[in-house]
Length: 233
Image (cartoon, rainbow, N blue to C red; front, side, top):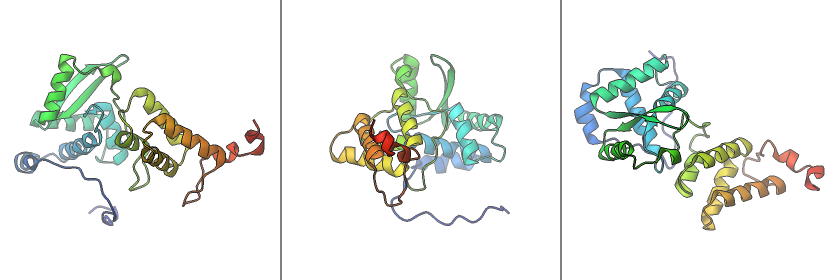
């Protein structure tokens, strides 16, 4: 019996859902006898679902890092994760592709759906330019439960993630509280100014002038930014 405490239940309010094809339950699940393969397959459905504007796949490095952080497998070693992914490929649930990027090679996994097959075909034919596609290598720092992280906020409200934008979002995520990031994006949407430049200006203004939020939290650098000697510069 597990030593983990019982699950307290799903929180109230709006929840994100990950849809699964009915055929998964009738044609795949009855034949899966390896728990690691099943867990990694469910992880792939969840992870790929989040990538609404990115290349809809999961990289091998990304899966290895995420599985370890989420503690999906007892060992969580790279060999264990790759073995589970390969099991899903052999079963036909996932499709596998090895691609060459500017500085490295990546192994990518797609759902064996019509969309996944089409994307893989475009990748192989060269229709998709990988130089302008973000391939993540792990989960961003986890947000508070029920609160979307900055990457998801950007995708849902502003646009496609690019390598340059990802770097800026990571820097902002380290600098500002999650509440500020979410509020700034919402303001940009409200005023129909859907650009990161506009969101960044809001955050910089709050950092200099101060912003009261319900939790009373401040950016780690806000206090320094509001010191009189800084304000006069």
